Image 1 (tube, rainbow, N blue to C red):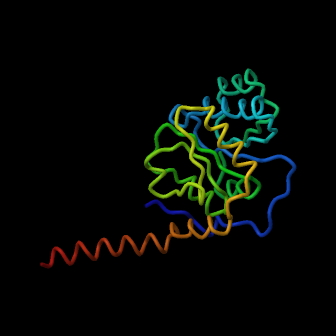
Image 2: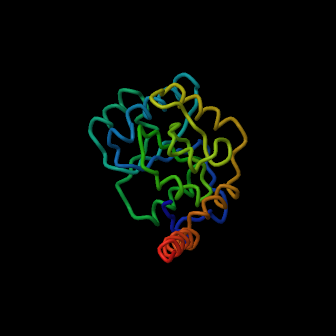
Length: 198
């Protein structure tokens, strides 16, 4: 497993108050992260589901994505942030309602456990690797890959249903802290050493 620095990523002292649901996306905005379909889903959320929102995007401002936001009529809902340090990412997570990561493929997705350590639920594409450590309806909401309409449906459902427990999410993410994962590595080394001694 990967690890999360729980001295940086931890639940806020009190909920952040805002009038609109706030979604957060953090990535390099490459084709792997599927930003175009994610933005299409947000356009559907606004146009078809009549839902207003704020989308905070942390990553490089790629010209074709800025243009797409304008074409999809969501440019006034999207707030862009340059790549930043982990402390600032944690602050943004404290001010959001959910992280959205609609990747086409991933090896793990560290930003998911960082968000969860902040008590933030994640909305992700239904990939096998995510299913290894995320639980639908408990720590995450899954959307069908390559289907922006389904992502829009999941986000709309998320907004209109009781929120997932931030305390439970953060407690689960704590199993990825340095101490716990370090102990697992030690156990692996001990098993290897014991096998070599036989």
